[in-house]
Image 1 (cartoon, rainbow, N blue to C red):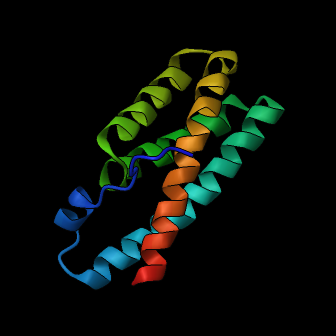
Image 2 (cartoon, rainbow, N blue to C red):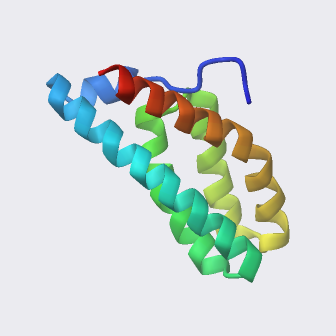
Length: 115
């Protein structure tokens, strides 16, 4: 797992005006990240490019609010790749990002448990 923090709440705090709103956003993001990662992995396993693309699109929307800029950009780039390239290209890129996405998920859960 990466050692640098992957969770960056700067933009989420600008979006959420109150602590309760931020908490709700984080809960939604935690659920979405968990679900979409599983859907992407299943889509890659079954060769379902459309399923992978849709889940990457969902994550791409959340990432700028919660992830460090470099990870958010990597997800945006991966989504674009999924639209332009076959799963044989998208799959390995996603797999290379799984440790960072898993690390982000751990950080989100830790942050939520500290509230």
